[in-house]
Image (cartoon, rainbow, N blue to C red):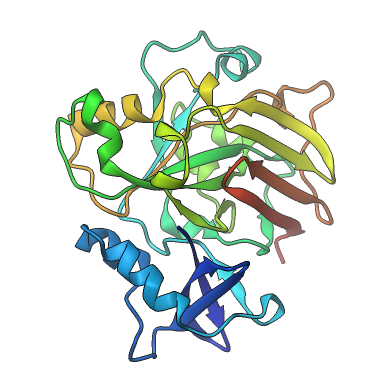
Length: 285
């Protein structure tokens, strides 16, 4: 199943891919099944029942809707740094024995087609194409062999980073949380539509059509099951939490000369089986 969250004429709704089109319902509809966060919290066959209800809704015209992040306000956004060996090396770090973990704020999220905003205070806006795992079942101290049963589905992320701010302090948080820099979507794809752990999928980032990153999700140092298990050692993961699983090599900061995004650029992140996340770049006004 493939879901999108959308806005039409100021109203938010949920849609499902059905027979080559998106069919959906607005929150104001009496048949509206709930948003993804609520459906994940319900568990069981809630997603399947919602998909059936949405498929009976009207087809949506792409030109009339804005696609929003699949989850508007995730309870937690866990981001993993240095999760591909080549990226770790190009960044000047040893390959880690434990993942680099930081968080994003929901206020930084944008959807498909919305502009990633280069802030006034920096010209070092970098691209980072990544896969997202979405938690569907709560748990603490989850065993690795059970971890994938806690993952409801997957999506795409562009963890656009303000590099000079990222390295102003020992913590990366500020450079990863500027407004309008966390592109997320366009679809939430349920886990049953993908290989276990979404492993072996081709990830490609393109800037103005030129390939700047390419890898397989099988190359992650810490796979999805490992990340779920490790995070659950510290916190009780909840339905709707997201794990942004890390970016491969090729980032702009590591290039000679550096390659940063600027107004007028278009960045695309494509992951096999998950689609294409496309965003233009604009300067902060």
